[in-house]
Image (cartoon, rainbow, N blue to C red; front, top):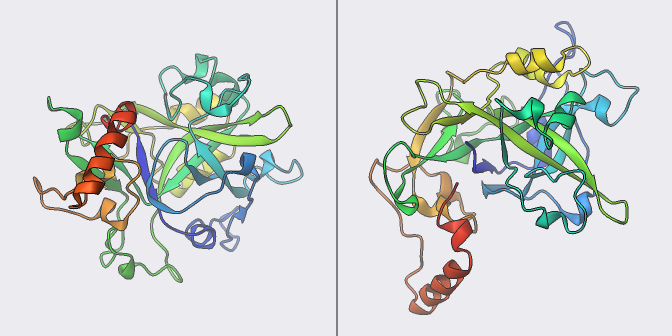
Length: 303
């Protein structure tokens, strides 16, 4: 399961962290950044990215230029939560939950089957994602939250950007396998959107949640997933497996509310410790109570 991610880097920093080689002998290169119109939507770096927000994903450059080799890569901002290509009217009102798709059924799905067979595979980039422990019987608001990330150099702390050396080594971004599609409105404007592939957790992650995003641990996995002309659909699907490399630590309940975007969202806390999510002002507390009632369906359950 994946319901929130964290990506605070700007486009140039993301490009630097995504350098790759097209052949073992070639020099590392950065993927092109292609800033699509996306019906007027823009990517904004955030410590708390929620479904319907935009974030950059990696795709094969051949999807946008047939003259390019499918091993070439492009970064494209896309909306999280796939919009069905057949949907008519406001893209926000298709009524489906599409931020995640189950690996077990995606090939036969009316929604995901066509993009999958067309090779519209993408890699969702993040510094990490948030997960709530659902293996214990607790109210949604009481579930402990964790920040899940990839291993880093020993001096790097994911919750302290002063320890990141982006000009040299960058950081090890977490890369999740996904699918993307293209929707058009009545004016012909395009919206690119994606979904994250999930499957049953492995033994390592099962104490936290029974579902886990399909995380690509190695550069070889990234290459195979993106290169849809050389790696067929079934082969690509069969290579996905639960990650054994991921790490995580507890964070506060601030992240439960998607409107909280501060750097406190991914700060590590001691187990059992929490941080206040509402200000001390009585006027602001009253306002938040009213807003909470309006957004109950969204905010009460972070999933």
